[in-house]
Picture 1: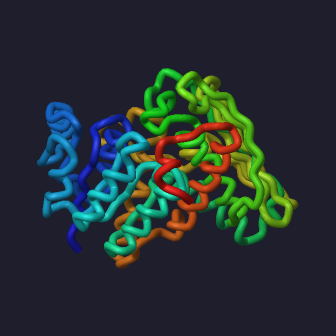
Picture 2 (picture 1 turned 60 degrees about the vertical axis):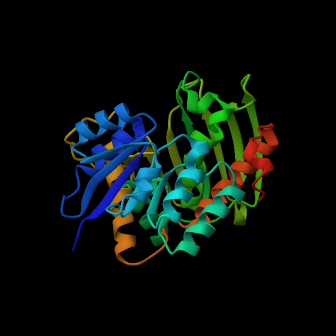
Picture 3 (picture 1 turned 45 degrees about the horizontal axis):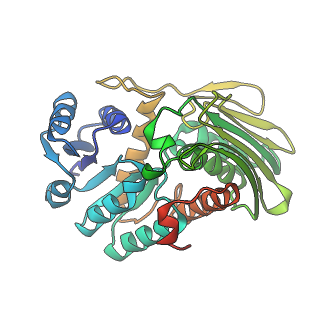
Length: 337
């Protein structure tokens, strides 16, 4: 069977790490064939580093390239919708970095369009494809934790200097950049959407949040307490607590270790890519790339692990938190939930 031919949109850090991760997969299954960046020189350097045969200035050429099957979108948050739609319109499948879009209305418009075009589209919530997450789900499914009662999750790093986080014009704020991880792990544990949300936050001069705390109430009385921060480094663990015991995901957004319900520490080492990654455990991006290939080959338009409904639900929680803490984006006036 022919390899899946990938193009990468943008030549930033996360795109670099995605290219590194794909290099750990069999070349018979995955090939990086093109990269597009806002500057031609950036695209050229990226292509040279990663052994990619074609590089383009801008993104339109990616959409027009007939040898591209699927596009990884690694742009800033507020460009996700426009770029992903362009690729879908050109007949490409799409794996788009989180958050899928700035709000739920925009995410719904994009996913509806993907379905109309008959193309696979997934929000790149890479966490859910790590072996640690799969093990957690299996434990919960077998009833080893009993009934899930609580999730405690914190995610924070000093990020106030990072433009994509601090600037409203780029779709900034920790709700969109970090909150997606805390929300998704709570939903992964409870296998449900929250029925009530209570949130408080701290805003910067740009009017975006640099930290939030929120309580998500789930059916049957379950609660997730989440915290994000762009000011402080937090423990960055997710603890899933049931009536029979708990599991802790260490570095929960990309966990290569967990403490199991019996106290055993389980490790899932990652392979070493040909070019070194920049961010922590980024070789684990390979798992979402392989899931993308699996679903495309099966003729499916979404993944059950990050379904379209999952993305809409996560975006809805983000919208609710932003509304409660007073963070508004321009897209909120255009795309209604």
